[in-house]
Length: 286
Image (tube, rainbow, N blue to C red; front, side, top):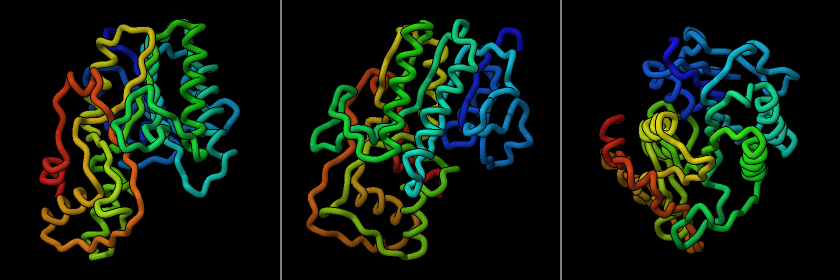
């Protein structure tokens, strides 16, 4: 362990945090936190339950010096009010910053969200228009700004990821999981327009690959990246790919509403790596 970089993953029971925790342990000394756990995490070493609403949520991790910290908290409950979202996504982040030995911290990787952008008929770049029209987006964007303020003072390297649609085998209650379940149960799927919104997407396996590269090789003081593969699909495309693999007829109900999309423009990360496409992912998991 002496030669391994010490990494803290806050939110290690999320889809992304889960994959990072399990797949980076051979190379790094990983510590993970969770609030509500899944996938038998309680049996893992260096895995701590924390409540970001408590006064000192990180007290069990005192006296640790981390090389890299990865914020994977994804508090996005539709019925939650602003106060709850602010308490987790903003105040929780400030508590983390106040806990860390920031003078020794080398890198902070902050998972924001691609949903903070205004949906568009054009491809979205990192400097595209921001549209903060719900509590989740507001608090995620505030989180970015908090990280930037601390970075200016403490000089750690800051990487902000704005992920578009992430999918993975262990995901629950998100778009791809819900589409698969509805098609299996022969339920109707309602989409806007003829084909539905078009979304850039990325496999969680590819996310982990990129994060590993960032930990090892990223050298700039600060960067913001849209996190996506080069592949994008309409809801109609997603449904047809899934239904073909399941050998089921999908019941899609369309309307005449106008649709704007969340499609990421190409960036350095997209050009650097090879990505799995959605067709191959579906072949693998179903």
